[in-house]
View 1 (cartoon, rainbow, N blue to C red):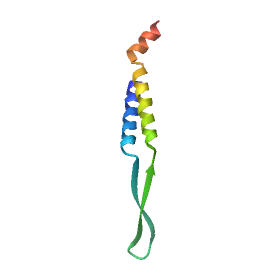
View 2 (view 1 turned 135 degrees about the horizontal axis):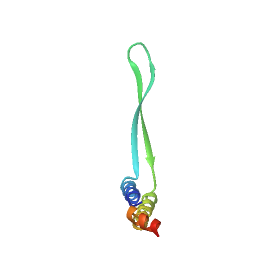
View 3 (view 1 turned 120 degrees about the vertical axis):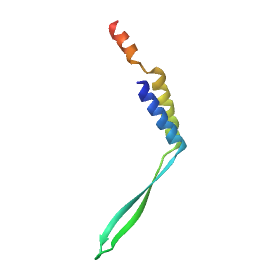
View 4 (view 1 turned 45 degrees about the vertical axis):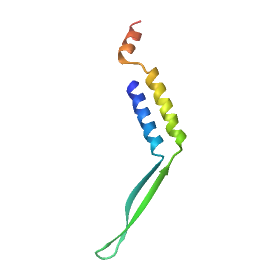
Length: 78
């Protein structure tokens, strides 16, 4: 669980720092004789700052309250 908490925490930090993600894709429209007709499309993904902050909080809680495998074995023995 602690590893999952760290991953969620790091993703939250990443999304907080980068609130806009732009991706360019090349799309082939058609062919006319030899040259190809190609169009470049840009896609933009925006998310709120609160999403990243929420992920940081959730990742921190999962990390702090996470159970280790050693603790899990002791709980099962009792």
